[in-house]
Image 1 (cartoon, rainbow, N blue to C red):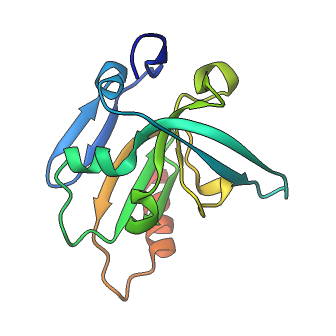
Image 2: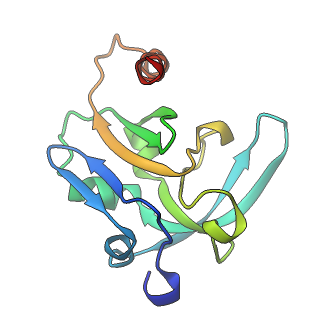
Length: 155
């Protein structure tokens, strides 16, 4: 992603593993981009498939030295909304900056979006601020973790 294909970002995105890496638009533009069709299923029952282009989540997590025991990835938006996605699904996802060849900032009210096949529309986080590798115990419910994190954010 270079030149006019550089992501438009008001704020950098932080990736957390063993290391913490903060990336601005030009940092992300230096990474290989991928495009793939992903279907978004909205809670309203509407759905659409778009060609999303951005950086593979796997490449971003690699930069932060993700621990081998990682089971999930927390994806947090700029407004504090968080989802907890199993690592296999997340690694197949994109941190997208373009939809159908146009920058998200031009076609939507957000600049980035986490998208992955099989992740429902409300869980495809918009305006991503942080991607964080986490290790949950087999007894820990990822959805419960989301609730706790959302509750912590509102306190």
